[in-house]
Each structure stands twice: as structure tokens, then as C-alpha cells.
Image (cartoon, rainbow, N blue to C red; front, side):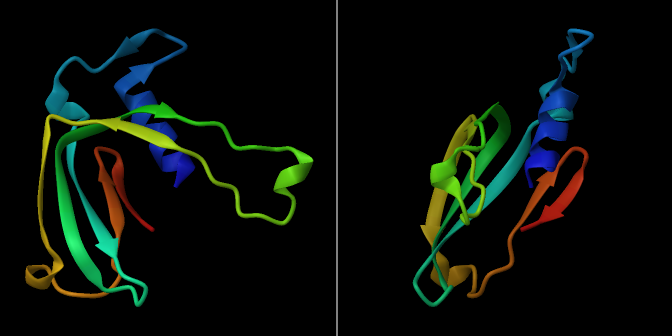
Length: 106
């Protein structure tokens, strides 16, 4: 997941060449986030319009993190969001990230 988000962000701006995309349609996507209950059923759905990553956090590599799954924060910008209840969108867990460079299942 981290590699996909890093590639997406690098596609927005190439840091070594300081070049990047100028048309928002080339890097912004609509993202859907499902809030799940304890059984994995969708209880609320949020749709973020024209989203793109702005910050990718570090992965902690100290002794306190032994035997833990590596986690990191990602901050996104978006134009606006909508929300709805999960009843109309079904149940279950089927999540993926669709980016301009491809779709990545979670």
C-alpha cells in the first residue's frame, strides 16, 4: 500500500526533477471509505471527491515497535465529501485504492 501511495505522490510531483502534473484531472480521484462495524459490515460510507495524497508519514523503526505491524499515516486533500448510511451500499469488506497509476486492493 505504501509503495502505491508513494508512486501516486511521485506522479504528482517528481521530486528529483522538480516537475509535476499541472492538470488536477491527472492526479485527483474520488475515494470511497466504508466505516465498518465489529462484524465487518458497512455502517456508513464516505465519498471524498477529487482526493490526492499530500503527506506520507514515517514508519517507526525503534525497539518499542517489535513484533508489531508497521503502520503509517497518510494525509489527503479533497474538494468535498458526501456521506450515506451503509444500508444502501451493501455489506462486507471489499476495499481498494484506485489511483491514476492503477487500482490497489487492500
